[in-house]
Length: 310
Image 1 (tube, one colour):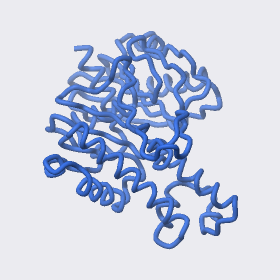
Image 2 (cartoon, rainbow, N blue to C red; image 1 turned 90 degrees about the vertical axis):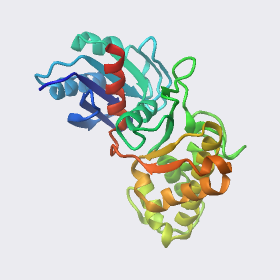
Image 3 (tube, one colour; image 1 turned 60 degrees about the vertical axis):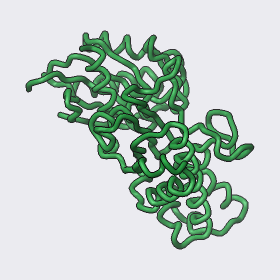
């Protein structure tokens, strides 16, 4: 196998993914396993590293990239209690990976890694600036501005899901009220449905088990509660994207995550940008679905690792 390769480790709330990534952003191999986060950090980390060993196989790798939700200390290579991983306080993930594989490792926010992946090898390839949002169990975001990844002073910049769209609104996982994530994230769609059902709101969602965000979106055409929740989520997402477009003026906005497979989501965001973005900007920006099919964080982490190890 020719060329330089990196291991890319993506640590999610429900799944662990490891990919072998080439210098062109192509994935040579990828494998996944459930996170089972209730097992605790030590057990989950050992499962992650064992998965990485299997994916690497006999390939010589030049570096390793680690993608995880924040808060993080990317410079120190430490997880500082990521919101989706309770109990993972001050985990020296970079040190563990470097000791296991003997190559330099980098730690990056997973959505920032996704932004870099789509910028270098996906739907935003060829653009100078892009905004990336992943709509799944949470609402993550990242941005590349004039060819530079937005990281901020401590490496935790780009928390675009925590822009306030409803002042004084629902409590978000970050502790604030009214964040876009509190209305758009899959976990929040499910929570809102359950809250409404619990106080007697009739809905076909009451008979869906297990209740997932995809069911809310699917039933939006026939069920009043699902329609209301889905419309509210699309309104908040459209408002968020229009604001980000006005502030950052990207050439491309890339939408990733399972819920973005619905055409009405993409259409709603395009309408919001067309209506609310400043005229010169809205004529330039494109709203696109991610091209890397959920692997953008792994691709981005692998490419960043290779670039920094060069």
